[in-house]
Length: 119
Image (tube, rainbow, N blue to C red; front, side, top):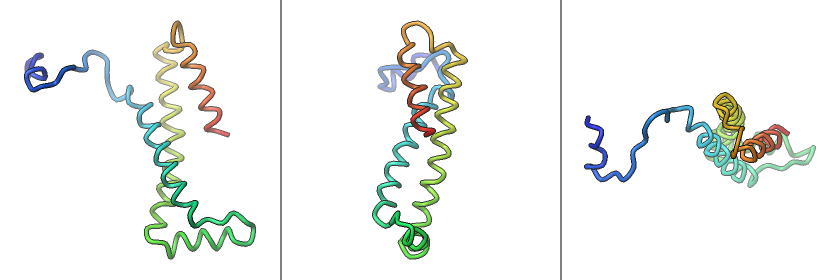
């Protein structure tokens, strides 16, 4: 494939150089944040946080609500993957020295959001 082939196919820009899978970690973290919001809203419809009702409401979600088990599993896995991809994203930014220079406030806001995410 020639270097100018994407332009001939109608693309106006081409990714070049060092762009790879490590550069999509922030987007994956954002995607799993959206999964957490969506599944959290769906679980909110049936979950009752009181001491006497919590176990019954979880059993109701898992056993009687259509695809409730899938929503609960998606919420649990989404939380784990959100933390994992966020840590990987910040590790990549740290290793590539993206915390220095004009990106210092971006780095500090990312570290702050990680602390918020973990609390």
